[in-house]
Image 1 (tube, rainbow, N blue to C red):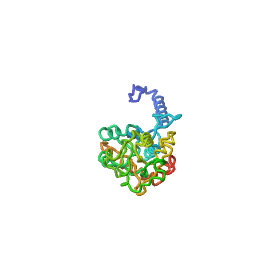
Image 2: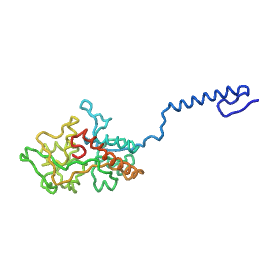
Image 3: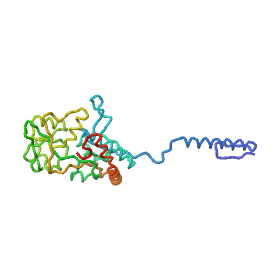
Image 4: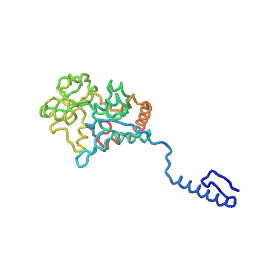
Length: 290
């Protein structure tokens, strides 16, 4: 007489029933040992969020690592990269950052679905129409660079309205709305393709002042690329409040509101325990308020 079971031991003779049961017990013990020794993931992999930023780099906030003075374009570093790492721990989202030409990054956010976020950006009306803005990450004083040879007694600009008295230089793709400048094409006498190129224009006398904060010039110098020429000085516009920099989340993203809520909560937590400022001070002495 035979007894049929569903376990891999298909047929067990009655006389050998005890042996079959012992084999089944051994296999069950082995099964549970494997389960206990095997790492178990209790949740699905962290969802990946594609982020774009400026290919021209924005050190000390975002830049390619240098190896023997050469860019390693496979590795992006900077204060904001470290902040994203901390946000990942608090939100469960993992961020994949790619540096693109700035105009293309904004175009991708506005019209495509591959990139859901961009960062190191200030608010403008146009950006507000296409993306949600997170809480402030860091600030940068509004200021300008000028030649000490041309202005040996220094150059003091107290109010943004005074900028119209000078030939202004800037960087292509950067917004200057926080300087009170709306129609940039009519006001700027020239724009560099990047910050380094804009300094070259200033050095050649193609403009009187170059608008921008000093941390980025310092950031380039910290990675071995001196872009601010000798004999040039930076000064702040004393009456102007600092520019605020944020992360922007595309409104095209189906999870935009979730990202906005969780990232804002993470920013609050990281500010409460001073993590963001500590990260920034690792890169630049003034921390998150420069």
